[in-house]
Length: 293
Image (cartoon, rainbow, N blue to C red; front, side):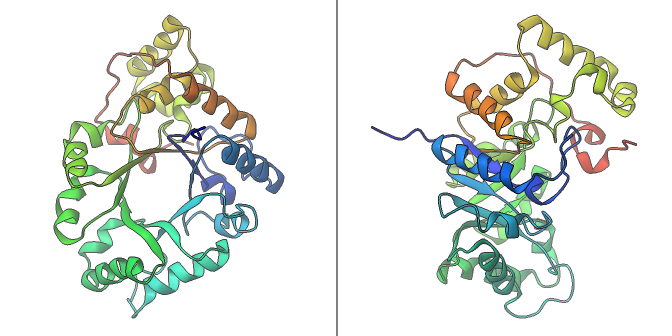
């Protein structure tokens, strides 16, 4: 019997950080992480996505993953300062040690603008050498906007691009880059399917910042939920799952119960069609620009 292969990848940001606007539980307890990993393993989830910037996520994940998953990490620590020879190899080896691994499924550059800095050629050579040395099976970049891909793809051959994608933020699709990446055989992993939890918030919970600036959009969003009789997590996740060009959807969860719910949505395979909620306003779709008190 063929094992079910989930399209979901488990994001580990809140293993090491208090992450997400709707996160009420804060940084996860070790026992809850272990339960989440056990459920992920038995439910066909194959990939865990972490990063050096996620607090102590790597250290906490190390004793728990038990080599049951492919692990992707994102690196950037110190790369924006004075570059030293073999710095990337050092950073990757450091993360491998924390995670008790021999190699990563993939290593992504967390800030791709480093590919255009004074040490760009050295960084590119080192990224490519990770595969040659057996430290990573694949290399790639985590981007915030698809515009940077024009220059990135001129200087390095990518295996994976990770980009934000959700009902409000459809830039990677609308830009035409999905087709271009697929033509090159590049995997597309998406993150922020719940827009850091914003799309999961109840109307009464929505911060004033969003109510004041995008009142009409959110009225339509909440009205749509009522009209179709579906919860926001179902609607938001369906939007990603029904796009065949997505190889993995990185999701973060606050509890094992929440992961159970997402897996139930995935295996149901009964996707909702929805009106276009696409938004170009970066003040909404880029969480780094949020002015939430």
